[in-house]
Image 1 (cartoon, rainbow, N blue to C red):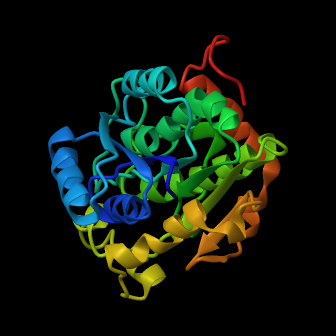
Image 2: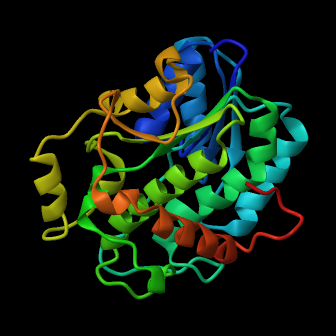
Amino acid sequence: MEGKTVIITGANSGIGKETAKDLAGRGARIIMACRNLETANAVKDEIVKETKNNKILVKKLDLGSQKSVREFAADIVKNEPKIDVLIHNAGMALAFRGQTSEDGVELTMATNHYGPFLLTHLLIDVLKKSAPARIVIVASELYRLSSVNLAKLNPIGTFPAAYLYYVSKFANIYFARELAKRLEGTKVTVNFLHPGMIDSGIWRNVPFPLNLPMMAITKGFFKTTKAGAQTTIYLATSDEVANVSGKYFMDCKEATLNAAALDEEKGLKIWEESVKIVKLTPQDPKI
């Protein structure tokens, strides 16, 4: 990864931190795109110390704020001649009661789906210019516990709010598949993955009984953050997937999706509504 620039969202904890550490160890230049700068800078120092790679930058990004996404993207477009890999890793889950972003969007969906959707659009010209480039999206098998309601793509008031984590991961899958289709022939690949259920981070605070579906999917088995980062790392680095796009991976192998996830018409409708929700303008880059 020497000479390559990698943006990782949510790189200050969990599998994002492990991904940053591993890729830094391979010589990559890492841009840690994080909401909490204090934690991110502490993690940066830890990574530099451990890997002896000082090509690590921390930049402010709150995916739940469209203003923050636009400011981050403008900074990247202005200062970065290329992006070799964009890793959409950041994610959040609420427990019972939902929250609404400053843009009037349900916060879990804003952070996990709409923020990455907007960011990808704003950086797409740099990615195309950098081709061959890769986009890696961290989804989840938990998508199987949900469906995306086209009539409620801004699901404010959903109870319990934890359910929207599953919905947001399903939205990630529709986004990744439609994005890969639109980027055919550009040498920018898009792949997405289930990292496994990780013994840290966003699920730690989910109370009973909301954790029951999660336990059913994981069969009570949790991975370490290091193990959970391996498929992300594989998709960001491996020559085996250099020409693979639009595919779902688990444990560094291609995996199958359910029939609902293969509904291209629904994926297109979600894309078109997402364009409106993130307020893309005629001046913004097109995909």
